Amino acid sequence: MSDKTLFEAAPLGGMTLANRLVMNPMTRSRSDEAGLANLLMAQYYSQRASAGLIISEGVAPHPNGRGYARIPGLWSQEQVESWKAVTQAVHARGGRIFAQLMHTGRVGHPANLPAGGLLLAPSAVAAPGEMYTDAQGMQGHPVPQAMTEAQVLEAKASFVQASRNAVEAGFDGVELHAANGYLLEQFLSPNTNQRTDGWGGTLEKRLRFVVETAREAVAAIGGGKVGIRLSPYGANAGMTAYPGIDDAYKALVPALAQAGVGYVHVADHSSMGAPAVPAELKLAMRKLFPRSFILGGGFDRASGEAALKADQADLIGVGRAWLANPDLAERWQKGAALNAPDFSTFYTPGAKGYTDYPSA
Image (cartoon, rainbow, N blue to C red; front, side, top):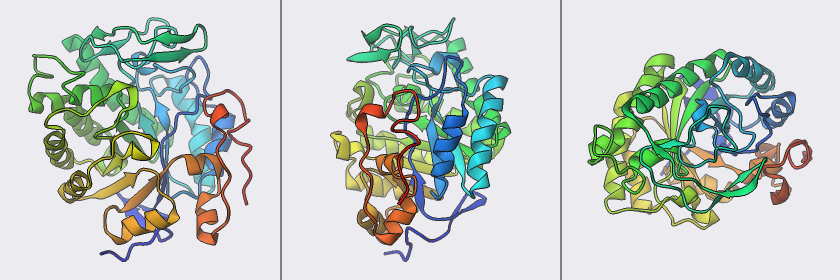
């Protein structure tokens, strides 16, 4: 048992967070064709600065990783400059914000990629289903090109440079997105990584891209500024569990600890219909990681407090409740009613369903 509570200050890396509530990363598609952040995004994040930590929406570290319509980037100097208004707005209200670095890999469509962008993945295995594009509406996922050795190294380097860019833009750190079926997780799974070279074929080689990316990001900006998000048993973007999945994550987490990562963020998407992450695996991952452990997955105030009391996590990640309630921490603390999220505006341009949710 633990004496942790949701609303007390908490350490993370070299920082002190105002509380143990994390705003989970959520794609909102409010950027533009150039992948720039804007003042509407600055308003959105600053409204939610009472979270102990905000983790931004997924931000592409490379043009090839911008698979969705209107997601922002962090590969160009212009993008770096655009994010400064966001980070300054959050800091002005006493908040902390990490940039989530998300390379979508096979989850994308050429109509969403910048000019010259390539749909690349560890192996030429298409994601099932369709992808929305502004230009062509819904389109089937194409078969991606299998990455060459040079393209693997380029992708890895892009995460490292984007980490440096994030710090220059004023972010307090970065979260490597190794969940939800995107590129980093595509290397982890034998269903999407069918390589037989140095980047696949054995468990150690499947882990290599993620571990090396983490190690090099830590070397670039410091371990206290690097976290990672994992979603074992997640079903997003056609991911499925595979034989040996528990052993894979039990090997990955200690390797990430050795790489110097400051926190591990485990997403359990069972509240959204995915298979649950087994309690034994979550507990094992928790015990295998010596630093901060974030747990997300359908939490309300009571279940979040219970998870802290049971010492299942150090911080509690919450998604859609933050989306609809910019003052969620205050509402939970007071026991106030919550706004309901408007699903129809999750990914639409403009302020509606984005910055117009009222505070209590």
